[in-house]
Length: 91
Image (tube, rainbow, N blue to C red; front, side, top):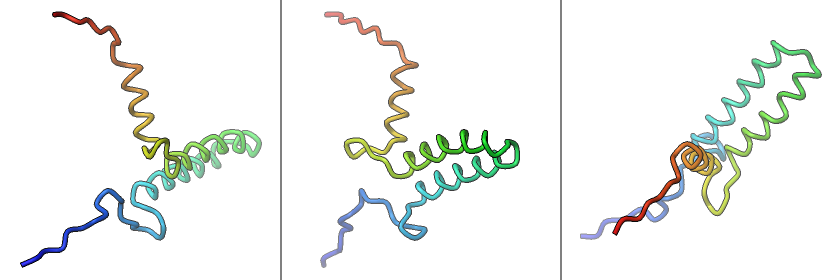
């Protein structure tokens, strides 16, 4: 008896249109922060604040560096900054 083995197990499923669940949550969170800032800031300050938030959110959702998502790159950066970097070799 033969069984079918899934071939594309490293690709996430497209849940909401062309977006994966993670991408949708990132975009929804960024949109939520921008919507909240609309009520707290005047138009000029709102535009100045919302443009970097939108760029960062789009980067989290879609940008990849060497096949790794931006979230994992930022996680590695935070881990590198917070952990001590003194390596001692003992024979």
